[in-house]
Image (cartoon, rainbow, N blue to C red; front, side):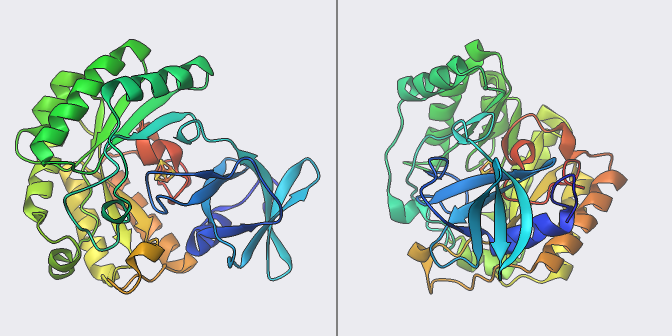
Length: 328
Ligand code: SF4
């Protein structure tokens, strides 16, 4: 184990497990409305410069125990890493990461949001949440994500209205919503700094099955246009690993996206219990995550892109992924 904290291989191992058992009550474990494991509790474990987010699951092979003035992660009776727990601000450290509409008209087979059918936050509620986060002195960025309540167009107008009101906090604002032609201009004019439109599945055949009613090409077109409007290192897309796609297809997509100026977030699939049996979901091994992250790093460097430049969102957080430019 690296005395300066966990090394890349250890973070990959923790991500491949993705969950942890808490030895006792930890007030740092909090329910989340965004990202993998929406609706569940999670903790942020920092070791050296690397951070990992783990869902709290009673049956996890990883155990979190107190050790000295910090904590340690134990697997099979052996200490895997030592570090400390980091308190999320809103969903993750240093960011107000807020889900505006916690419900969605779409039905992506890996996503819990359409099943959870949560609430819709008003502009006033979001601004108040950010205001409270800002008063802690820890607010470094704002990330807004949202399901689709009525239509992608109506959602973009709603979120754009909120972004306009968040300018007063003078921190970068990132937005992740369902795209459509014209969405980039709406968000740019509202004051957004970065955008993320999630492709989720790079296998076109699989995509049609796991994301019914959504256009793969429309997402690609919006990503391409976003680079011309927001610039390089400002446009991101989540790609799920573990839905049955091949590594060859993943590498080809990474190359295509990096060439466009888009930074992929390689996200290990989270087999949400609310989606059990609906689609194949196999958590990738540590080695697969490492190989793909190293491939992504080379592709980003070849295209002059740097994940370390991210101002908001998952590349700024890195809790759920191996992030080139930050972790490697
Ligand atoms: S990496 Fe993204 S989804 Fe994961 S905890 Fe951080 S902000 Fe949330």
